[in-house]
Amino acid sequence: MDTRIKTGAAQRGSVMALPRLLDVARAVRRAYLQVVGIPDYERYLTHMALHHPDEPVLSRRKFYAWAMDRKYRHGAQRCC
Image 1 (spheres, rainbow, N blue to C red):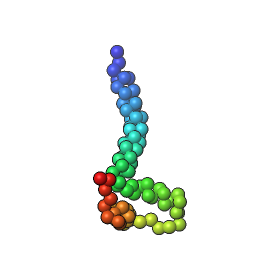
Image 2: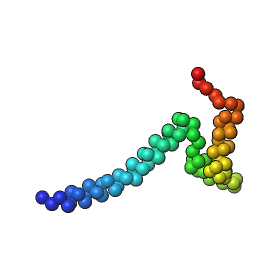
Image 3: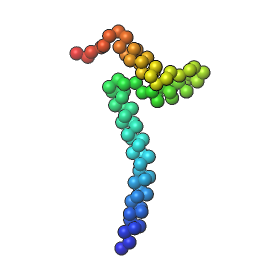
Image 4: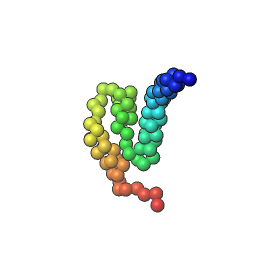
């Protein structure tokens, strides 16, 4: 039996699965960030490009400062 054929097919399969795995990892990361309340800069950039193309975008540092100020403007809110 020629194992090179199986190995080559397995390698192609894993290479083809890598982009899908990365997509899933990105989706999990986005969901996690939303659950714990950490702002998503890439999502902000996409929103600005789609809905406010003529407005300047904040730098990553200014975006996070703005998001934290917005979140804690009225003090830390607790569920308990």
